[in-house]
Each structure stands twice: as structure tokens, then as C-alpha cells.
Image (tube, rainbow, N blue to C red; front, side, top):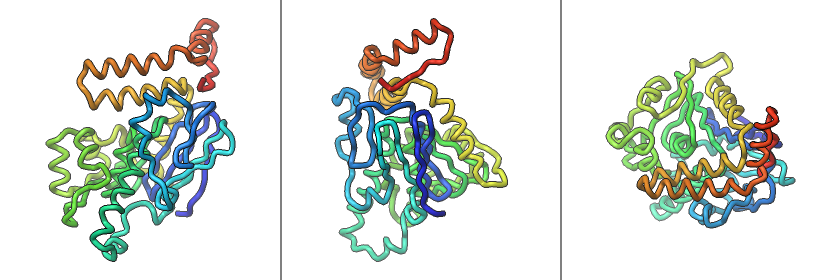
Length: 288
């Protein structure tokens, strides 16, 4: 699969593709005044104290740029590149040649990239139309929503190689489907198809595969189009409130929600939403 680039203008879609698993990012409206991370993403400015935990350790170097990148020509345009075919997962032949001292730093870079994807301040959807094994599933687990074709195959199969998932799989899979089931799948290195993955709650939607082989991808685009009309700032802080709130007790989570809600109060978008409701028209959000 050749590498390609997709431009996401205001209200458009960008995709990050890894083999037959794709990441769909809903880029809502204009980005507005922003700041840049690792030369790769420009994101709207939200209170740095709110975003610090998500963006402090941004990976750099050639490995990061190979993994995924973007070119921002203006603050109104976000360019998202496909993952190249050779970057869709771990190359085991390459791994065999590595010295033991090289393996740890290599896996750390993979984990850092996946963490960056998990912390992207836009909704992300993993569309699995083929294989998502090991690191491929870990990448999907870092997304907000996962959809798959019934014929797709996915699993954390690392224990077959006498290692464990190292890209966040031991942490994100239990949070997605529960500890007991996650242990069973990791201990057995079991591979699930789309129907089985839906049954255990690993994915949100399962589709019969179409002739083009992109049923999950099309579903992901449909979902992203549902997200796009919403207020950009609200989408970002909603994701932040959910992600951080799930890691703490309810009282602390409610405090996080309150702090995130406060970020939306002074925005022009909030006033535009109220005015559009009053005038019975579609709101024109600018991410401000």
C-alpha cells in the first residue's frame, strides 16, 4: 500500500492508515491560534495546565517522523499522512538482529508514539478491515473508538514470542474489556474476529466486509462525519474529561469535568451555539 497524504481542511477528515487498520481523525473546524508538538501537530491552545499531562513527553527523531506526521501550511489546515506499509507493525526479522540493549529503547519509542496518538486532542477512530495483531491492536486501543469488519483478525499475541505487549496493551486492554477477559486473551495469545471482538466489547461496531475490503473504514468515516459539526473546543475538552476522569475516583472525576466545562464558558463557540439555537439555524463554529 503506497504512502499518501490527505489534507483536512475545516470540517474535513484526515486519515492515518496502517496496513488494513486505519486511524480516522475528525478535525473539527478551524484550528485557531495554536502551538506545535514535535513539529508534527498544531493544536488549539487550551490552558497549558489542563493539557500538560498529555503532551509533556513528545517523542522526536526519525522514528517519530516515520511513524506519523503532519504538515501544517496554515492554521486552518491540518495535513495527516498515512503510515507507510513497512511501519504497520513490528518487523520481527529486524528484531532478531537487535542487540538486547537495543530492544528496550526501540519498544519505548513505539510506546511513546502510541501514547501520542492516545492523547491527540481530536476524536480518533480505528478501522480494522484486516489484521491488527500485537502492536497493530495496541495502536487501535489507543484510539477513542474501534470498528472492524467481521472478517478482521485482532489480538495481543506477544506471549507466543515469550514477550508481553509493550505498546500499552497490558494497560489499555483491561480498561477496554475488563481485567479477567484481558488476562485470558493475553495469556492465550488468542486472535479474535470482528464478531468475537464485538461480543467482548473490544470494538463498538462490526460490519460485514464489502467487495472493496473497506467496510470498517467507511463506518469510521460515517462516525467521524457525525462528530464534525460539534464545537471543536467542546470536543477536545470532553475527550480530556473522559480520559482523565476514568483514571480517578468519582469525586476527582467530577472536579475534572468542572474544570473542563470552565474551558468552554468564555469561548465564542458557546455563544454561537446559543445564538444558532435561538435563530433555529446550524451553528458556525470556529474553534474559538
